[in-house]
Length: 461
Image (cartoon, rainbow, N blue to C red; front, top):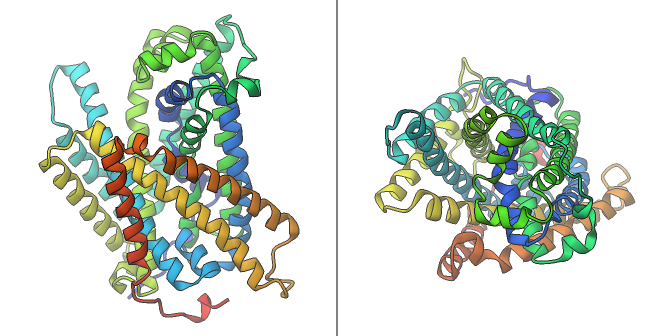
C-alpha cells in the first residue's frame, strides 16, 4: 500500500491554500459590517490588530513545534506530542467535527448565494441544496486529485479576491472621502461591545492554522510550514487592518454603525459600486460566491489530511492512509470527506433546516468554538512540551518562544471565553447553545477513548 504523498508544495502554494480558507472578500463584504454592527463602534481596525497580535504570538510556538511533530495532524499531532496520546485523540475527534461543520456550513451558504446570482441573471429559482450538491461534486473531484490542482484553483480565486479588495480600498482613497482617524482611538474600540467585535475579527483569520496540515506535501516542511504560517497571518492581518479602516472611511465614521446594522449583507457591495464603478458591485457579488467555494474546498482538504494522518496512526482504518497511485493524493480519505459532508447536507435538507439561519449559523458557530478551543490546547501543548524537555538544550524552547506562546495562549483563552459567553448569539439561541455545547464536549471526551495509536520510530520524541 502506497502512503507517500507528493512533496511539491512550496510556501506560495500553502499560503494560497490557507488564506483562501479565510475568504478575504467574504470577510470584507460580510464580516466587516458584522464587526461594526455587533460592536456598536468603528474600532474594527484595532480589533483586527489585536487579533493579529494574538495569532502571531500563537504562531511562534506553532512554528517552533513544527520540526518536533512527525506528521500532518496539526492540532491533533501537536497536542499528542505535548499533552499525551489521550488529549491528542480528543483533539482529533474535535478537529474532525469542527472542520466538517465548517465545510457543511459554507456549502449550504454557498448554495444560497449562488442561487441568488442565478436568479438575478436568469430569473430561474433553483433550490439551494441542488446547487450545493453540484458544488460538493466539484470539490470532491478536486480533492480527489493532486493537491497542486487545488492550490492552483485556490490561487486564482485568491488573487481575484485580493484585487477586488484593493480596488475598493483604492477607490475610497481617491474618492475624496474623509480619511478619519477615529477607528484608531482605543476609547472608540472599547466602546459598545468590544468582545463581540474582537471575536468576529478573530473569525476572519480562520484557515491560517491549517498550514501544518499540508506538511506531508511540502517540499521542506520544517522551513515551509513556519514561513507559510507567518506570511499568512501577517498578510491577512495587514489586508484586514487597512481595508477595515478604509471601509469605515468610505461609509463615514458617523454613519458606519447605522449603515452596517441596516444592510450588513449589501453595504460594502454598494460602497464598491460607488467608489469604483457600478459593475464592481456585481463583480464583488460573484467573487463572494467564488470565495465561499474556495473556502469550502480548503476545508475539505483540511479534513482529508486529518483523516489521512489518523489512518497512518491506525486510530482510524489504515485504508484512509492510502495514496492514489497516479494522483499521489489521499484520494480515499477525500472520498470519505465527500461522503460525510454530502450525508450531513442531505439530512439537514430533509430536516428542512434553513440553510442560513440554521445550517450556516449553527454549524459555523459550533465549528468556530471548536477551532478556538483546539488553538488554546495547542498553545498549552507547546508549553508542556517545553517543560518536559527543559533539560534538553536541543528540545527546549527559548525564553522568547515560551513567553510568546504563553501570551498567545492567554489571548486565545480570552477569545474562547468570549466565544463561550456569546455562544447563544453564535448558534442562534440558548437551547441551540446547550445542545451544541454538549455535542462539542461529548465528542472531545469520546475521542479520549479512541484506540491509542501505534507509536512508530519517527513519532517518538
